[in-house]
Image (tube, rainbow over all chains, first blue to last red; front, side):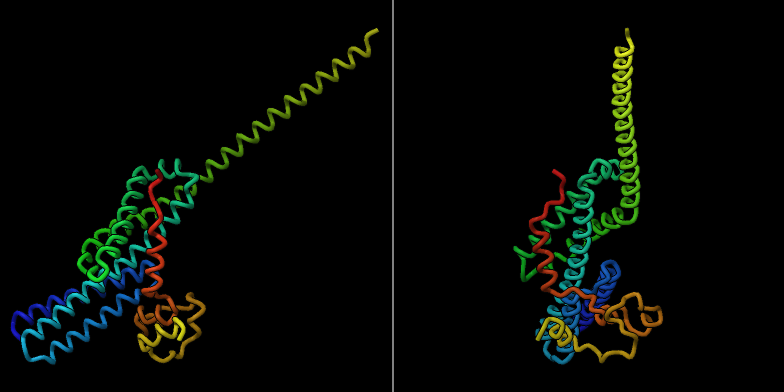
Length: 209
Length: 70
């Protein structure tokens, strides 16, 4: 193996470490391990082993190319899995609080921007799949950027915004209930007043000589 | 072979560990078990994993969804 090939091998190890790290991060976030990513890492090991077995430089380079591309694909797959989990959670949040969008917007002023970013990330992962089915590994860095943005949104909605929004909704519901109670009381008193006035009028007419 | 079988076959999962039944109750995961088994392996043992087919279908579901409020 030439020094240049050894250097490439070091880069592949760095990519492998990155893939491991991302895989663990996504596992911690979603509570699920991403099987396609693990499969890609299995292939990395296989191609490195084959590279070590070869004697000619071209074959070694070819195996290293393939190992590198499986590392990139492993990173892509892990990020994609994390993105899907985060997007689904944002989708659930959006649908759950759709009727209370006014409260959500008051609590999170950049909520609309967040949803637009979710739309953009969702459209991009669809595009990578449709237009670059066999070559999605090229987009692992783009996928990483989307993931960082969407993960931050997911965490903000879940950890800080949701409890505040729930509290606001409970407050609004009790205010609505109090207003309804006041309205019903006012109407009941008015009806009672009319009945009493009617009775007094009736009695007065009856008692008149 | 069913889907569980296919995944198990693909990874040649290690033999069932001599642990309490982890397949039904995630809350039984204690720190010492996590130490004894790598987290990834524990998740696999618990059936907590995302396969390619599942990911494909979830992305397909997201396809027609619009996040924007407009």
